[in-house]
Length: 157
Image (cartoon, rainbow, N blue to C red; front, top):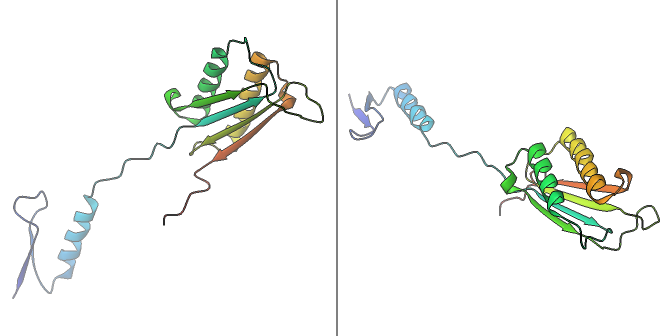
């Protein structure tokens, strides 16, 4: 009868000695070893980025409350820490919405995960309220584009 030793004395895996005819013992040992592999850390995702473009002149306005409100809202709704959220605000742009140039805004949110239909609805309502309160842009003249990068994963080459 021939014996096969599996493992070594210094590892945490117990030594399994089995005869060549006993496949079950070797398969059992291999399965136990596979289960001990290090688990990969859960991927947190990229930071959400909020681009706000408006035709409202921002000169002389205090923009800190807009940045703070948008950061808090997006972080809370998408489920990311506030220090991961980036907000970009551009004003005095040539924007025509509905055929006129009254105050309007176009906003994009790019994030990796955390965005589904209920979250999109909450983002529209919350960011619309912030823009109405801080820049006097009516919610009906606000457009939001949401892009979840996990839905369009780039294939590995």
